[in-house]
Image 1: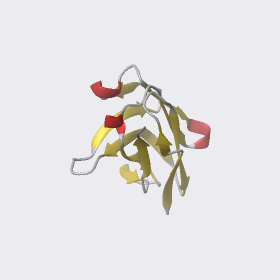
Image 2: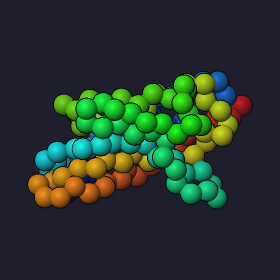
Image 3: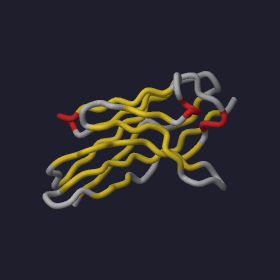
Length: 119
């Protein structure tokens, strides 16, 4: 059994900051990549940021320069520091991990955390 548990979402005013965390637990052998996705009402889920085990990152154009993804491999945890938040960032944010429990790698998802940017 593997669980991804997110935290750190909430309500913030435009221009504010939030930090999301996601920790993977359970029978984990290895985690290859981790990432954050988001889904706004009426829209498809989209990639926000992605980080490999070695620390290579990539970001959606809409968040470049404002969001920073990082990870702590020893803690199986990924973070998303979100600065200069805009109302368009409002969405449910999902953590993703590509990991192995001993066999092939597959994707696992968290339950999602709501981020609302509003005055």
